[in-house]
Length: 208
Image (tube, rainbow, N blue to C red):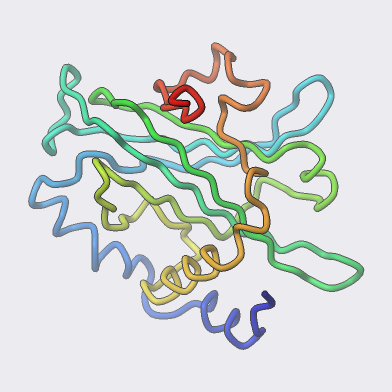
């Protein structure tokens, strides 16, 4: 499905004051002590494996069970969904490509941890992808409950709740075209890299 240019301009335009989204959603939850898992940072890197370039996204998680930083407590069933958009030049025409991937941590211990996602070298080379990603969101679910967005779960280029909502709508409509291309770490050569520690993630194939 092609998205009208007018709609894209509206959704991705700079609307309102910076970080208005965080002002709407995050403070109330934080003050009530309800934020048990949040995003500390999202980092994009070009990484190499056997001479090939992969695009890595590292989502840093901050886990505060019960709203407190307790290293001996845990938060169960945490799902992390990464949504990405890239602008790609194809025969002189700019196209927008969307990617989505989800992982579920069996449990997260209080403190900091990280999950990672990768686009493979063939896609990186084909689309000339670089780690200067402008548009992304991270969705967090705890025990099946979608958490409200916070300052760190959306890219800084989104300056309003309306633009984030529009982006999420486009991801829902378009990302299925690229299902499976944005890979969780455990499906890549980096799965057992000791420099890239990860919480234990639920593997659906183990349930079959």
